[in-house]
Length: 267
Image 1 (tube, rainbow, N blue to C red):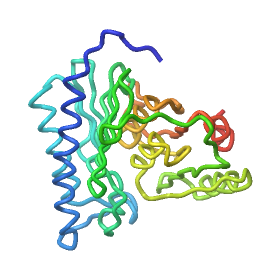
Image 2: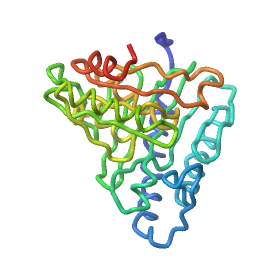
Image 3: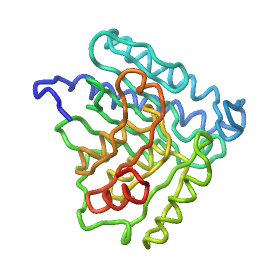
């Protein structure tokens, strides 16, 4: 993975943090009146969207357009608008919409910035817990300003692994991963937000996260966080058409990455 050492990302990093907080505040307002939201389904009854998702994404897009009109933007609700600057934002206004509409506080705002198809900024904000996870290339990762650094002694046997699933994936694929992990004397959780669980990996709360199919807007902010905290991840094909398609996602701390790659058959 090669990056330009002189890449200036500070202005975009500051904007990403500001937009994450503003978007999170708007989303939280809707979360607190969720009984009044009209919830629609997409491709599957478990794949839902509401007015909150759309308005939060519009807020983020407007902020990016005002500050960096030549940047590309990819969002879950309004698709891909290519840019000319070499920077592309990948945003999920509310990752974990199902928990959101059901009153479960396991959701977040996820904002990534890519340069030459690689994540150089990753910001995830969980408004219900007032937690801002922030990372940028070469600047490390933080949680509410406190540096995150992964513990190399943690592994699948002495920690917890996050596992995700969705309607794109056959149930036996996820089931096999669960069986493999349990047989390896590990354990797992699923909270309904892949982006938030990737942030938990960066924070050392989970030793790893695996989901057989995720989109760029779900995972790339988390990937940047994990990398800057000292972890590793399975490459995401963010070049060309790959940016708008899904792929397997795996990220982990140093002591768990090899075992999880083997268990997920991503070696």
